[in-house]
Image (cartoon, rainbow, N blue to C red):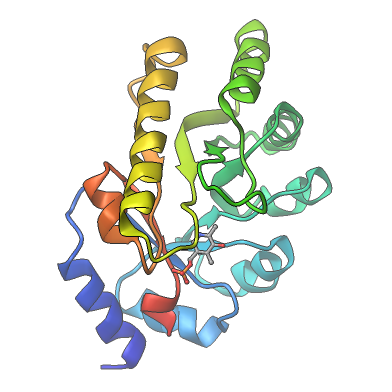
Length: 219
Ligand SMILES: *Cc1c(COP(=O)(O)O)cnc(C)c1O
């Protein structure tokens, strides 16, 4: 068994069934991704458009690709043919662009709204006010191909476990608030993407449904 396979197997033992593991393959080669694929894994994440475009076309078509990085509108068109999920929707403009490009391919794209929960200003994401504005616009003009199904967030990079826990709990509260206010009638609005290699157990305790794990799988 290769290292990637054994790390993936170990990780799966420690993660409940209902939590989806997105293997974040950024900086890692097609061969490394293939090892995880051959071990049965199908959910992969990339955070840069160019890297996704270099890898996705030469890998098996039944991989479910998750785009998890900050996305510029001019990159949307290129990645839409490959991605199933985009975790990093942080403006109405990007949402509209996804709708436009997805409609051209008649393809539904599953989306998560990224919220800014960390203390660091370097991280992207919506606050409550921005999310409210975005939802009002969405409500006036519902989209067909771009489907928001939950929230995503990243905790502050810190050793302070209680702070990380607070931030993940805050994202869960934001999710409940959004669900109650805007997505009551959409049963599939149920995803909370939070947790990475160093903090995924805390995220799972706080209600994560998708963890994005890179280094713990790929080294
Ligand atoms: C790189 C990355 C991850 C994975 O980070 P690891 O610490 O390697 O697990 C998760 N989410 C996003 C948005 C990333 O860019």
